[in-house]
Length: 110
Length: 114
Image (cartoon, rainbow over all chains, first blue to last red; front, side, top):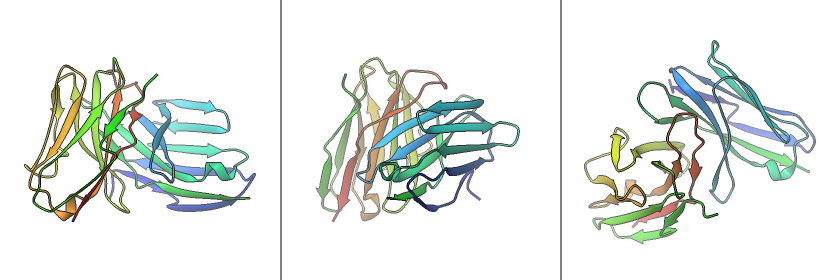
């Protein structure tokens, strides 16, 4: 079993739909990252959070430390949101090692 | 301002050759990370640096892989006697020191071993 699990693996949506991507982890963490990988391969850091909720534009990330679960929400989805979304857990205790989920491939159709 | 710069962007080489990949982090970023993404696979941690020292090398796949960082800035990842399974995109990221700092990624080096 992977230490960081994401679901779903693939997701298709119509433009305007509300999207949720889930991430569960089994290790102790100091923070959790959400990354976006564009079709060309470039990776952008969307959020890094250790508690609560963060919002940036149409993107919202939440984390529940007790349940070891995080979600990434996209409101009013748009075709330009099509990408692979990756959850990555930053291990606690003397390391800055990221453990990656396998990613969620999102396609938003007009 | 400049982001994380990696070179070359693409490298094709024959099996058995040595390759050297370079990463220029964002100026002032003390932490530097190397990752690998094989075709159809997720991201895999290789090694990270705090300054010039590497506290965690646990992700290096074999002793053919090594990395160094000098002057707290540029890092090179060297793969000796390349094998076909080394073909992947090698990504570098940098950040300010501290677990609450976001990582900034380069565009990667796509390595193809023939």
